View 1: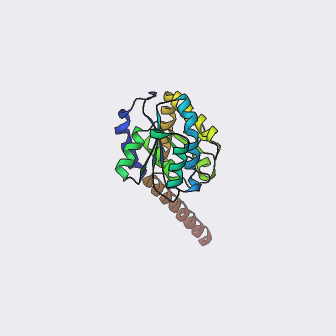
View 2: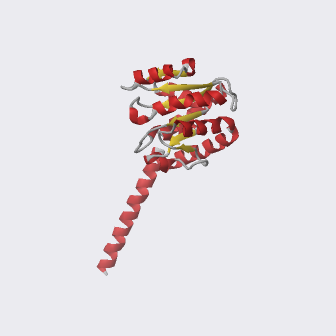
View 3: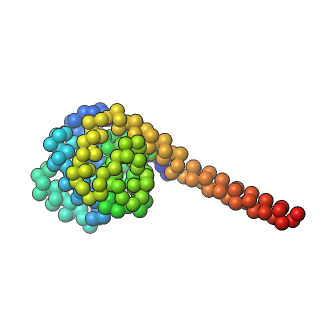
Length: 212
């Protein structure tokens, strides 16, 4: 339920918007190649060049975990990348609240559940321009897009959000409102009921017309 992620706002004071020290960039998801986490790690050197206090937190497990650790080490990222493994929902919500942005770097994504979670949490969203993500994110309005698989494009999007905290806050609020009105299960249920009512109403009208 999208509404549970609204609780993330309680943790937002744990970091100051626009502060370069300890700015958390968050990824949540399964660690497999198609999720594009390698692209995010590869973007970190450029991000750190212009925002030295940035820290990437990767939450999740999967078969690519060891290769991603090796990639981070090979790039000399040291303590700037933390791989925290699987985390329960309450810890995930806390991290969404503390993060300056959440990144969904998938090479392809049909649905983008983690993008919706970030939006519900009010965390500025940066997502690859692929699959279902391209339909969810309206660039510069409710989040930011980057070219899927491009670490340079991803780094530019992250740096834009880091350097524009007020713009990021406004986009995150637009995204949060959209999610709660569109993706929340209550809203989905109401929309489904409306469709059924319309179908039943049309059927009743046709029966009445035929009876005349």
